[in-house]
Length: 342
Image (cartoon, rainbow, N blue to C red; front, side):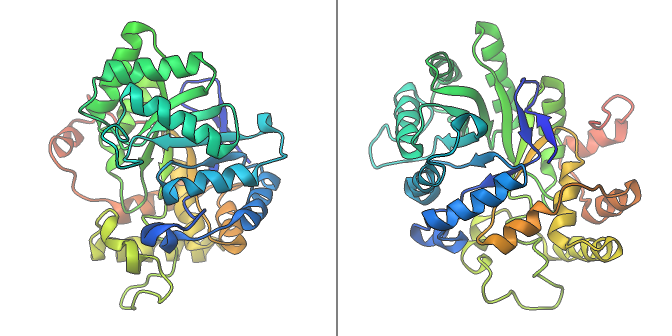
């Protein structure tokens, strides 16, 4: 397993990390993802660790906290210093007026609750699950800094921020000497390349590592969706499609066709090729993969240890290219002054 620095921090993380969105299975949305219990979670974690994947990602809203609880039970008895535990908070965690957002009140409460569910006394990487425009950035980042200094958090990051959200937060941290975001957990895939337009150049400039979520495009790049064929009966997209990022049918089929061609040429699967393409993109520190069962997990783990050729990358780039929105299409016309990240 390859390890990379998380942004410009000193922490090294595996290029694949394991997401626990399938743990718990509470509610219609998350039960469609999966309902992994503690016993099955232990098996999946064993497979991950054997393959060199020691980073496990969760969030307080995954199955209403059950995902963190299952993860906590599943890692009991393992050397804590050999694991990298990542989780997130910001979205509503209860009915109360202050049980949402990135206020000092909610973040302190969220971190303490996560620590209890995870059964640990520190979190390696804590990320804001989204930007809270109703709380001053100074309040948010100073609170995270206090939690780092208290030893409850080791590193902090963000998720689903726009460029100005991330840059303003970094600027405030720089101004006051607070712990800065070293990671940005962002949606990025062959059918969702908007991350490249502004967030990737920002990440390279500021040293923020991308932790990629939904690398298979909300389950659309599993190899089960084909042009002219109905959605498989067991696909979670029957429940969650409208909740995920929109994708034009023709773009999806064009990308899948290209993935199938490359996969057949090199003897890999469609998901493995899609994941490997991401691992070669600038600023990517780790790609979060999930799995309902051992078969899915082992297939995803097969995305490392080899690389697509430049020609194959170019073929996938061309198939997934879309016209950028303004001002990004304009900037693309002046690459001499606005070069793409490398």
